Length: 123
Image 1: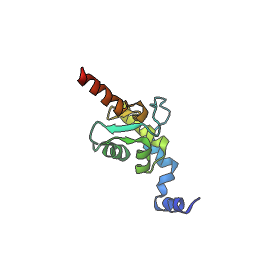
Image 2: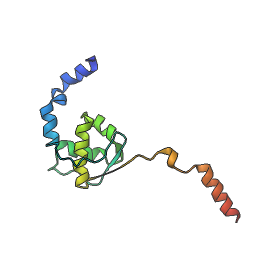
Image 3: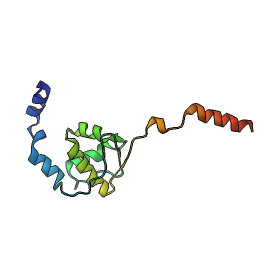
């Protein structure tokens, strides 16, 4: 185990506690998981309420502007599987919205758009 990881574990022993992670996620046997991967972008659609779990409230506060699932996982210091479970619950209640990231190659080329615009102006 690396020195940094050992220090982080000493600083927060609950970080790797399986019981704590089970309490956060609840029963994982829901089967209704959404297709979320590390680069899926998430944005909040509501403000956190006092009745939310602390982790869910933190996600809603973090996602006021779009963040990837990997970033959320890193900011919260929780495993990807736990974060996807929390996000699936929030998606089911429509408190967040998710989408695949925009791939640069799928956007039209600016020079092509300018050429079309200049061609239309000449008509």
